[in-house]
Length: 546
Image (cartoon, rainbow, N blue to C red):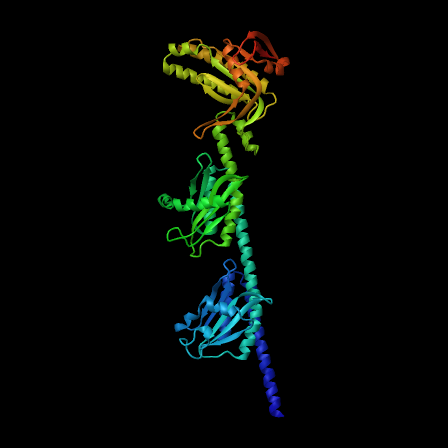
């Protein structure tokens, strides 16, 4: 009876010791989970604790990489510095076999799963599958002992520990996802700040690709812009200082950039070669308009660019396509209209947020022509250098008059000035604006002549012709040169009326007159005949604005 009582007491004490051991281990794992948030450090701490608890010679934790679905070694503890051929146990295949289990299993050195005879006798491996819930495998832990076998109690404690290790792993994943999301948001915030900064277009591009390079841990970032006229990609900015190297591998970079454009999708290639190991690039396309390609080359790690890197690039690209497009459109608008409209008008165009000012459209406009009467004789009787100076002074005064009244300088043809009113910025009072400019031109030109006659330039009065009508207006030309100009009957009529204007006259067509007749003083000039116009026409010579 006493013997039975002693046996029962020993069993109870052993059970209590086991429970105490379980509780201590579980509390330690939970403490690690609750205090060590960084996933790599947390997993290493758990492995070190398990190795210490079970006195292992080697302890390994392998988890399924969620992007690749491959088993990867995440943490390892070597308790014995003289492991010999135990390193052969560090393999994806063995971890994958352990993950197939439903419960903790003990493998011996002569078991086929371990490879058999080359391992020392007395070796045991506790294979612990890490399973979340009922059927979601996360990975496996392998605990290896050389001489000390695992007890039944060890197995029970391992089963209990696994129930807490899996939740720690899930928490680690959640922390990693949160950290990655925060990194993504912080990067987008910085890109927004760069995009909204008032720096130049090139400064924006260079700052963005440096930010991209740092965010995805790449050797080089780049942006290529698409030249629609030449149908080619051009390297616009690169973080790599050695441009010779960039040039050497530009064909490879462009190959994948074109792949991105052709597929309209983010392209990512890892393990390409020795020099260009990995490339990731994103097509920048907005409203079916190709803008270019944003990309990075060579991730610093051997694994190449990850899914997080791809998400970061996509997020940055989503912030940049509109900014680059708008900047390119603004730059193009400045190139085409920068010297044709008043700076205040240009700012209105840029601030409007619209990008279609240069497209062709039909619009009722007023067009003005002004040129010097007797310019051929003037050229023959004036020294070339003096003539050029005079013409430049005259054109400067005429241009100032046009821009001051919100007109658009179309072109110079010799000494002839052509200007538009009502485009690109719509002006309801375009006819009146054109007339005011015509009268102002006559006044300014008289001031110009007062000076240049003193320098030996013969009298050179101007005539002004104005016509109003429906015209096609927009950017026209070739890939080598374009102009913002008009085509239509009213444009031809304005030029012919200008030719008919006498010195000091401002002649306007009937349509212009009808629109503003109550606001001007003008006298009719009857019986004029113009090429392309049936019959004779009455135009009006404007004396003054009422």
